Image 1 (tube, one colour):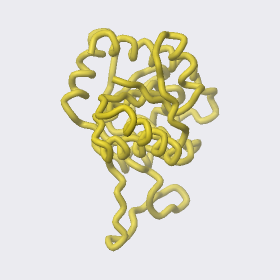
Image 2: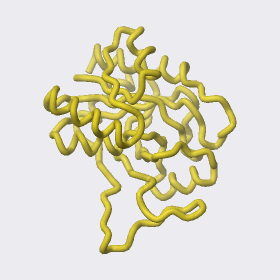
Image 3: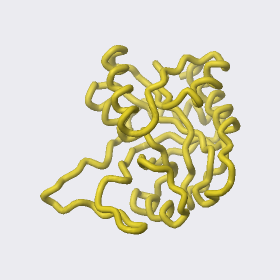
Length: 204
């Protein structure tokens, strides 16, 4: 099993904990290219995409909480209004959903539940981090009550699907979208993420 993270910011604390993350790049484009190249090099996996994310209003998640993605949605693809996105018309089909449900997800969830509180649910990938709580509410509602927002998950999930790699996505909450002006608590989130990854490395 190999580990992917979007940024060096996320990689450094994990390296200090003895983990060996591969940095793939931040945002949908860099992450897709970095992940796809790594998947071709490493083979069928399994792989874990790990990092921080923002918890949507209504998710019930707090700073440092952990969640696995069951499905990734591409939240920014469509027609953009002030606060609302709409899908393209039927003759412009756009793939916006990639499932991450598989038996390994169930096994990893059970493994983490031995030591950690862990949630599973939809995530949304965006190109720009949401700073408007109302927009956060809309994105969460449009995507099956999504838990977490991030900037890489959908593209990495698609790269994994294209290359035949079994992928898990695990995020720790660094910020609450309902509190856009509060400082992001990145170190706290990454410490909990590292503990969970070490547990998976040892017990999965």
